[in-house]
Length: 246
Image (cartoon, rainbow, N blue to C red; front, side, top):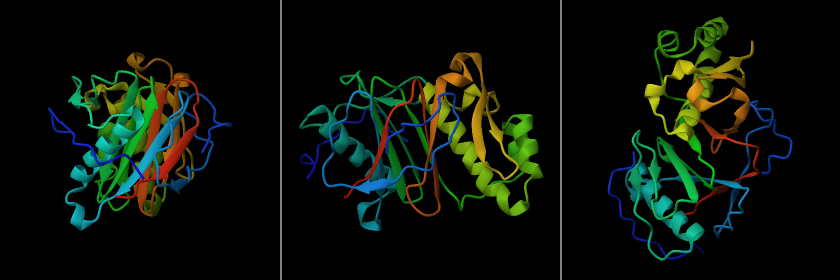
């Protein structure tokens, strides 16, 4: 079992190994398999842990469930009996001031949430439901790089929605890892889009984000109908994924 549920103090509201992965944002591996597990395993210095949380109506709003899960996991990873204070950086990224070496990020969509943890490695994670509807191609023309928008327009209509969300989650994950927010510009994080709608390499990022080759990304499919992405700037790390029992 996990450590006893911890009380979380919030000053501001929070809105599988990678042995063959390539650096540079190239996604060559399949989505990571999520493992059901009863205990939070130790978080090794080089690892990244991702947790999937599914909220039931009895649990209340998914945001509340995600924050309770965050408190619980921070307690487990840091060996605490009470969760640390969570604050927000200038652009809204959550952090725990008393745990400077433990980085985390979270996202939720519908009744589901994803949480990511690493030691001394800034992370970004994003999650979307494939039922989310957007006005395509207008949104892509407005917010994406021209080459990305054109690539989406070339796809059959039935493939555009999925490809759009694949792009969106990767872009959001990168921006969240940077701690920059949407004001950085979605068009300044550019990916190659294949003729089949696959999203492949990170080909360009604004100078504040370093070089495209600095970045690693992993696709996440925690449940049917969910599209997610994990991003970090740095060398490849093993990624383990788990399901959290509430």
